[in-house]
Length: 507
Image (cartoon, rainbow, N blue to C red):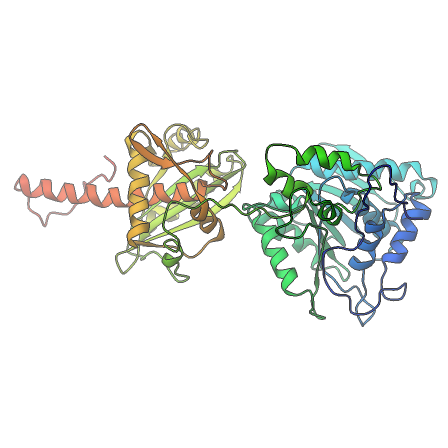
């Protein structure tokens, strides 16, 4: 039984069919899609009333290939907020768990454990309220971060955070990764997706509304899926309910396309209120499921940063190099960057690590530094004040790392040196997406008489670019100080051929 449209909620009805979708191989029927069985399970066993778009999603996502096996290994579900994404995933998950004999593990993942816990907890309560399902279930575990609904046959539904280590070791038949738009690096998705590779009917479902400039993973997956929507061999599907590009903000027909629950569970008054808010970009992202690309220009002339891309760029093994650390404005992610000289005399910059939070930084550096110092690493640069990474300075110094705080006029010097190097083509990078994105839209501000990157005012995460600027500045200052030391040797009539073994780089 599908839910009926209620004109009292909205004079227009949400559109059932996604605006962007992977083309089916043939007509979708009970013989060509397991979605019909999932719908029947949701209605008859779970007692749920599906919105038409949810039924359409299940039919398309669970399409069978010409060989009678599951067609897709990856499915992207993109739809605006408050349209019932969690409910349809609950049906899919419980259908696989209880009605598919081959399913051993359903794994729900979200940016934070609390996000994964909500649909898991709703499913737990639903299962325990249905005698036929409860009879097949052992006592759910809710303790010490262990969220598990175990079945007597050994199958289970687990909830985990998106920390890469949280999903390692599992082998999942169905993974659903909620709010995929929050993933700014590939680590968590790659680790979670890997849990499905060993399962014959493994499927990873990425669930989200539209992303922003920071949504690296979602952008890549969406672009890949769109490029294959007519490919009969594709194992990835996209099912996107979104408003057409360029539509007016008050286009009700566009609202209906991006909000398929409109008139079923969603009141149009909710959208009218949201559309009246002062930030139209938020409405487009959250309620029209549209990607809002920043129109802000970066600090350099168009093409300047891109011209420095060299996929084979690397540091000369004979060169020293500097390491820098910076944490994002929202403290969500910390980055480690390096800079060193190439054989052609230009600098190479690179982000070599990025992970959530900052607690991992000191242990990670402690593990690498003995080898790095032998290879030429000279110091670790961190902003000395006004940064979320500043707190790491004392911890690194206590661990006897050579730390160079970047503060005061050095902040302006590091920005200026980096800015000029990019403008004049004196450095290269490998085209890392997180650096490219930061360089494309990073904003600057003045502090007194100095110019710096504006981490708060930029529409994208600028921390990786800031870290690169520190590393580059540290590298150039090292050369300047060495040159100064050589001049002093001549001025004091010291033998210029005397070894520099007593030279202290940052002394």
